[in-house]
Image (cartoon, rainbow, N blue to C red; front, side, top):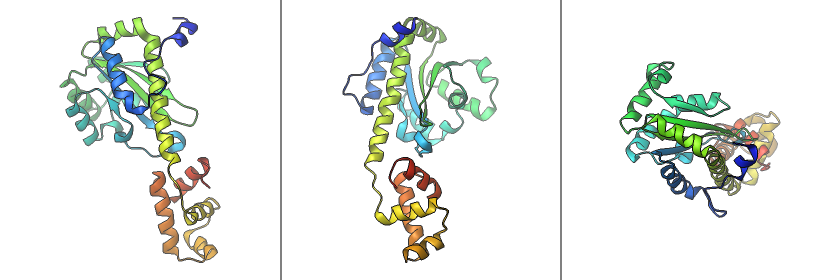
Length: 241
């Protein structure tokens, strides 16, 4: 396929779609290609922002498998997510030869997935300019179905993968736009960036150390960050301080 033809391929989304349309639109595309399932998940959000698997997982897999996948925390050691973090190019997966390179706890993910006829797939790692990384996958019981789909509609699939990344990310950014920090939270994070300890910040602001820690904790919670240092850097990158 020529580069021109690739970018002329039609979109499976409308101009007004948001991430709420992802599952329906991609399920329709998957069926039109003669395949069984699709899945999409963010492995990294922009600027290292924290995000749970539940928040960005979209899939047409059977609901029982989705529940098991999330409950067992399989996103952390799924062979597909593992390779998605390492690869720049799309890759195929499935079959005994593929699984032979992985330890038992990772093969177990595929063993359980096969009970739902999730046997073979192709995955597109999608990287953005702000450190964001997602993976878009199509899966089927038969590897031959995937080969046929890629040969006949590779451009359409690639376009759908990037459009899905864009839609989910746009909604995530809008969610962040709705987050506001109080003046004290901003002050505590700003001084944290300057390398000040909680005690030093308390002296500067004329409040107790426990109050400084509470403000820093509240800001970290709002921003989905692990600690005040992570929150301070995150707030700076999002122009909140």
